[in-house]
Image 1 (cartoon, helix red, strand yellow):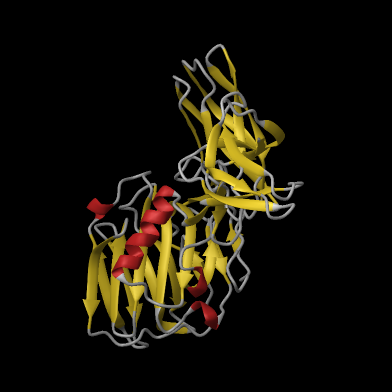
Image 2: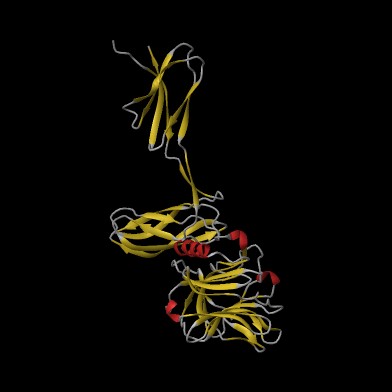
Length: 392
């Protein structure tokens, strides 16, 4: 005899429960593209996300075409707009618009100074140092083509100035900056502090010397170290990351995560007493700044410890690719609650993906209470509908 089944209710459960949650509960933004005759003519933000302290990278993939590009605008930690910079061509279906996850500066717990230079010269690190642009500067696209997210200095009369503060000069430190030299062989100072009068033989500098690039720091009476780096490591108008690590007795220079110069057996560098820090010029002249550097700057950090070699590589990898560690939360098991059951009656839980064909889940059971539940492993499934039926 065929059993007849009485359906006592159907409910749907979305099993696709993979949340793009960052480690600090930030939310990734989302957007969709609009096409016209094979071109991407607009992008609509569908979810502004939250927690954006830097403008995220926007990529457009799929859809059968190529060449489309866009950048995001952020306000109050939320992506408020996406502007198309290149419509591309050949799109036959809607491409995917991917907005990078909210990011924080790598190794942020050791930050002293953090200058993202995303449209303004503002320290977003823990100390909120005053930062000024002497002579101005022009905000231009950064290494990821995000508009107004890097600062270009003309090499004539423009530099970034941070007033003297002892916190800028920890005993051990890491200096990090993304740079694009307009003329690597031009004699100029990229980053320095120290003054021939008030801070004689104190501080440090990163300098283009015409035939090489060098990091130098001082003992209080002379040079402590000069680390020379070949200009073959730099290509004009091409982005690279320069990192200097300084312990109490060693120093190293890295370009794009690779160690290119180092020295041990040093004494601690002599800290400056009064002069401001400068990016893009030297301030060792009594008449003011000089040896201005024609360079575009982005993502400048000072850390209060010397990063290990592997950490420098991680810093480069993260900032080069916009990779920020995230946590994925996957719901492995769901609990299906069944209610309004009749004591002693036999029931069967069933599932379906289309509401027309149903598959039994588990075995029939006799109700011992008006409510019951069943835990179900859902890994590898996408969408499920559930119902409980009464067996004769």
